[in-house]
Length: 52
Image (cartoon, rainbow, N blue to C red; front, side, top):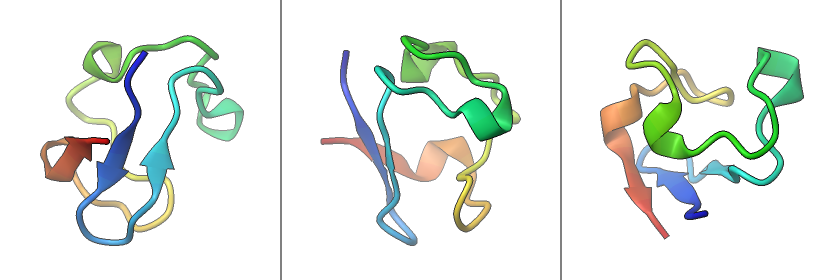
């Protein structure tokens, strides 16, 4: 499971943890997030994230 970093604010999406506050279950791969998903910190679009 790969983590992805926001290119604007540096937030790291960790698929092992998911985002319980955003209704994203643990173990949800980044590629499985909907295209409408955005950074929970700054609101950046999914395409601005890069694998770390």
